[in-house]
Amino acid sequence: MNKTRKLKLFLSSLLLLGFIFTSCTNNTEPANEIQKLVYKPTQQEAKDQSEAMIKETLKQITEAMAGYSKIPDSLLGKANDSRDYYYFAGWHTWRGEIDKSPFGMTDAYTAEYLAKIQFQDGSKNVQKDPDGAEYMRMYLNAHIAFGFVNGEPYGDEVWYDYDGNVTPLTGNPSIINGEGTYERRWVGVMNGQDTELHYKWDLVLNDIEFRYDYIANDFALTGNIMIYVNNYNSNDDALYTMMFRFNNSRFGLVEVYRNGQLIQTYGIEIPNFYEMYNLPSLENWEFGASFEFPTPIPF
Image 1 (spheres, helix red, strand yellow):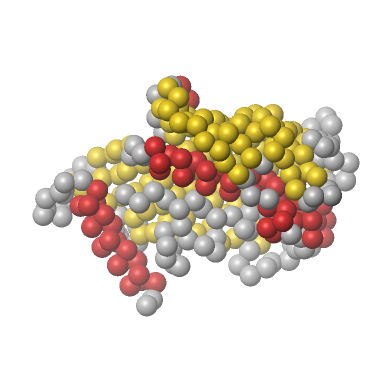
Image 2 (image 1 turned 180 degrees about the horizontal axis):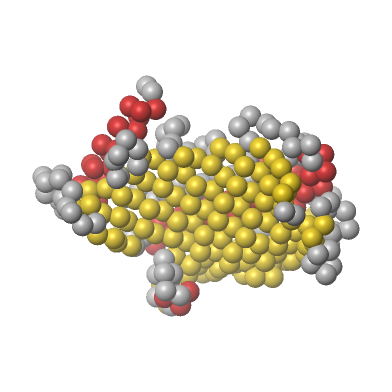
């Protein structure tokens, strides 16, 4: 089945999803004006998406901390498959296509990432090589869309952004600070009216201690990582606030708050990415190339 036919089938499914999402009429003609709605996830959906986002973010951070020493070997800028590397304006930069679609279909209208790493000395002056660097800045942006083709206004797209830093690079622990956002926009027909549905997750890492155990080839975290669900006005107005507490371990305690009230606590285990991906033996490492979007909530 070619890509164009897949897109047509997907756009048809968007219409069906719109009808399933609420009580609907048989009128599929879009209205003149579009209504914009914020999707309110269930408690389980908030939990699942938050866990997926924190695990993927920590995977990328861990890969960067294990792989940054490989960067000098990549300065020739060799392309690998559809990915490209270059050094520009003080940033080691990778750009390429995302291999895995979160929509459950292999093709997408756009599926791409942009990832950057910068090294700084103790005075935060930019330096090209990691040797002797005190700070490593990290930036990762990913976007994937399905639909919005052949003049059709309907489709589905998600974004991920992360911006953070690690210091010191040779310390144990290293301190991680950063912010990330995961956002979705769905456009379809609901109750005969053109509709946009949005939701977003915001992640904050503030002075998180990261320790690597060379003997066990494992890592541990200390500190609290926050995730805010649909905080379109401020963190205090988030529908859900998820607090992930770690105490020198990959095992953490999660506190779930809704409208400021504690409603659930449970445990979580972050995977040992060093063991899963054999990180100390990375070769031809490319920041961002292994990124995978959390699967969007099914509307």
